Length: 207
Image 1 (tube, rainbow, N blue to C red):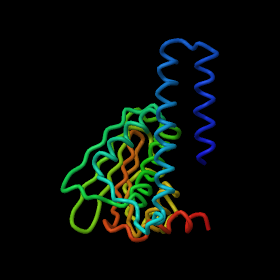
Image 2: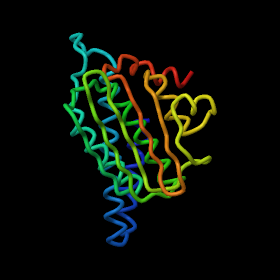
Image 3: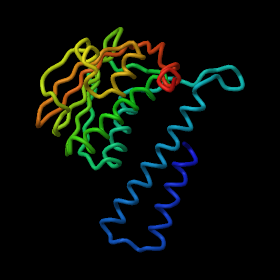
């Protein structure tokens, strides 16, 4: 994965150097190249944070609010979306492993909005209390059919909704509710604030 990200960025830089793209396209390519560089660093930090360092010390927790804002800027560039982020409540410091899972959920939602829903805007909000995080993701594109409002239990029973997001949420010990229409998709996700299952999610989903 790290090699693929680095190779993609090098290819973009080579195109910019040799093809002399128009100014607007050049700015777009520069933004995508910067997003790839940031994703590379995030992935490298995540891998380093999976276990303790040579002194047996685990990777430090990160501040949720600025990490979410930075993620929103990068995903907006990557998917061509007007992406807004907001936080409410007392924002906790959370483990890098848990934030990686939150990033993957938001990233999948952004990809779905851009590719399938043809959305132009995506709004991401997180509210925290003492025990849980409420993650709301809404876009102005078409949602999956059938349209309507569905609880977590209904989505599971009908094998409905965004499956990769639903499976990740379940493995994190959370719940997912969805409202879908021809002009809006809204996901409401509740996750345990402790995130004790986050380290095992990727392995569980791969299996």
